[in-house]
Image (cartoon, rainbow, N blue to C red; front, side, top):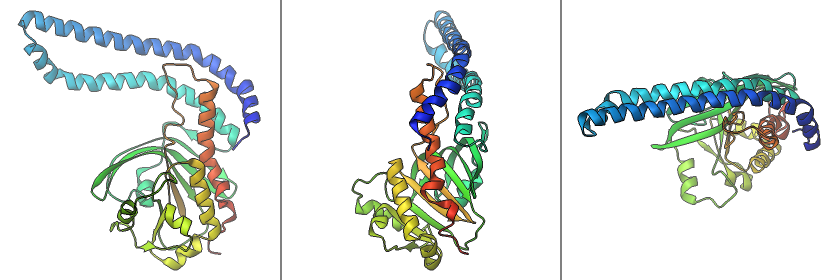
Length: 317
């Protein structure tokens, strides 16, 4: 992650002039957005008032709502989002793109693209059926020997018959080395607070996962549950050094983080870092906002260094 002093200089010399140029455009878009909502509200008042005056009751309004209200609500939402997206896309191109290139000029940011649903399914981190899936702001590129790809992800899935939601970063690191099995390292909880024995028992007895593998590190067992097809290969992949780095990374992000090793790739899901690139329309973005985006991006990129992925310590030779 880049140092605070270096980012301060980058902000003042590169980002601030671009933000000042964008501010007039943001105000124009916000004016259009507010005007559209005002026009919609005025239209609703006029139509409802007309029906009440002609019918003498609110019955006509209820009928009108049932016939046209729901479709109209979808159209209004779609149009509102289109207005907001106009500003969002330009902001991402000019500001977020600059921050990403500041970290690494070889990285490519595609605001309209995201991690494919198939990649999330291959990871089996969210092992039960996915009910809803959204992904955007894909970043990809080569960091040393490691090819990295990540994006914002929002999804809803079913775990042990109960609906669960996940919102955060989903990351894929591809390797040249191969391993034959599939392995999961699932957080027992999102923090280092005490975990209930019931929660961990439900996690570890989930029949839709591969067999549970017991690792020797007691701290790692407390924080993660390991599942996989081959305990011997799992021990070769999860070296003591890698397990310690995974523990350190979880403590660093201070939230739930899951890992998966499958098809010569490592998948990582980090809860809580969702929409790190999405600008608000209601107010001008300030330096504090950009520092938060810079930190969120840094979490993803730091994973390569934090887990020492470029050295291939865990891979078979």
